[in-house]
Image 1 (tube, rainbow, N blue to C red):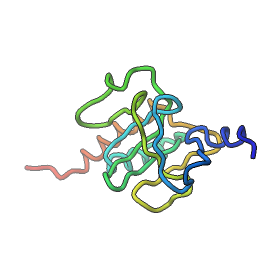
Image 2: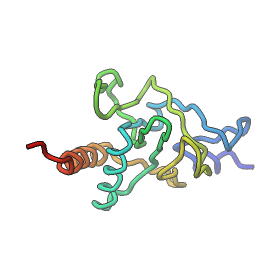
Image 3: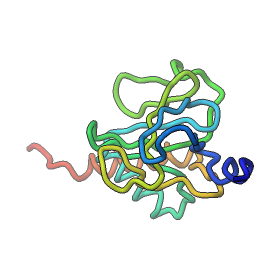
Image 4: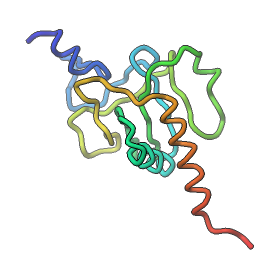
Length: 147
């Protein structure tokens, strides 16, 4: 099998022929991609906002155990520690490790909401940030008001 074909097809999540292709993998962030991680309710709303604005959406991971959504974005130049907050979206970049589901997995605790495509597209960071901000406003507006 031609290794170059495998690399071009899976630029975001490289294949490792020694490992079980149906098992999750631990992948270093910061080289090929970073991950913006949010609570799942906010993440689903943000994903809906991206689609509503017709943004080309790259891979998105759902961790059902911890109720988290991860948007894969192009790697940023800043160190992850400079971008971390105690609450809200977390930016995982260089120095972080991300568990990614197998590409063909549709069931289980860790799944692709949007699987990696052959073109290796990632969602632009500014689009993800804008969608998260819009989703946060939408969710805040939908909460019952206390009189």
